[in-house]
Amino acid sequence: MARRAPEAPRPTAVAVLDDAVRVLAPDTDANRLVARIEAGTAPRAVFATFALEQHQVIAADRLSFQHLARRADGDPPVADFFDLLAQGEARALKQLAGLADACELTEREIAGYRPRPGAQAYPSYAARLALGGEPADVAIALTANFAAWGATCATVEAAMREHYAFPEAARAFFGSFAEPAPAVEEQARRAVQHGLDTGQAQPAVAHRYGRLLQAYELMFWDAVAD
Image (cartoon, rainbow, N blue to C red; front, top):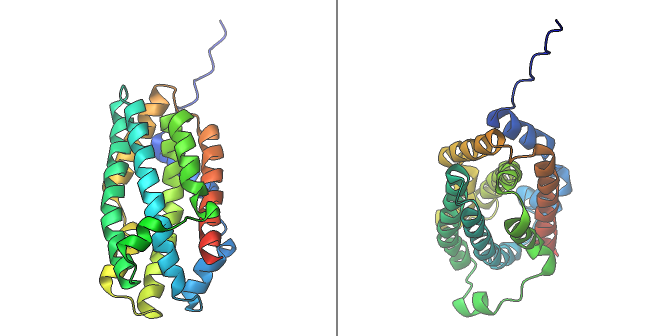
């Protein structure tokens, strides 16, 4: 009697997420604005533009995460992940106020700001994923993007302190994303493992989402620079 070939081991969430972070890591040399900020050669005005654009991004992303949580209502680990992200966006909006204050932006300027299309491509694509992307795959793509975003925020926060003399309150937004987020990382692992166990997660599809998210994030920085 022929022996059955042993089944291939199932991928784990840890392995899938580590692979996504590695494969989808962006080319840091391509981000010309962050390179200039790191060197202290970018004009201080870019931080005001960043705050104005990011105000729009955060509001949009929060809605996207809330919608993904509702779509994943029958899959608690996945829904919990997006609920956590939505809560994080609410905190980020409060922290962004410190940067807006340091840049002397008024509420009227923030409310009346006309966002730049390139800077809003990222949240627009996130909204598209919220409508039609498999939530577990979106979780993989976002985790890879957050790893890159966190590294970028660490670079910017250090430069704001060393080259631009921004006070702590103005740097808090970047500092919060630069710090490890164990609760988010753990919930991401639970969400992705659930997706893998139920056959909902398809890492190849998630990588396609992730590549576009990384590209749109670079567009954000380019638009702020322009």
